[in-house]
Length: 171
Image (cartoon, rainbow, N blue to C red; front, side, top):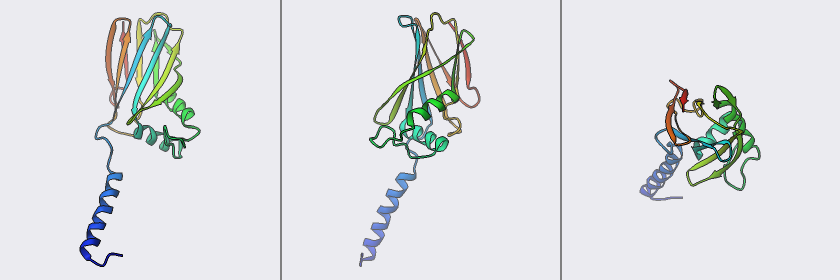
């Protein structure tokens, strides 16, 4: 194919560089954010998780097998069901000491991240809120989850990691 050894070496270098770029991690830290907002007007809590697309695909592939292609025309048909299942197992809210069910409302795919929307219905007043967030802990040992909570005019943030995955907030 290439008679010149320099061309062969250059071609091999380009191929190795391209392959290495696929093997390298796309981001050096493993972090995701969760916004938890109480709406007095609608008597609900809206939960928005922002997760890197490649991290979401990795967790789906490892936990549920298959190729997911989140946000693409050939997205796996079980993507939403598996997201719902995984998040139900790894994200928990307790409102005034009572367990709350977070209903999956849908997702929005951005350039590098996916926004996952959940809702807790029939929430009048929040005096305390327990957040347990172990999302992606089974995938990355250094995973850190930032949780931003807004109840009325009060705003609080907590970080969940493998050392401390649950926090009680009082309002």
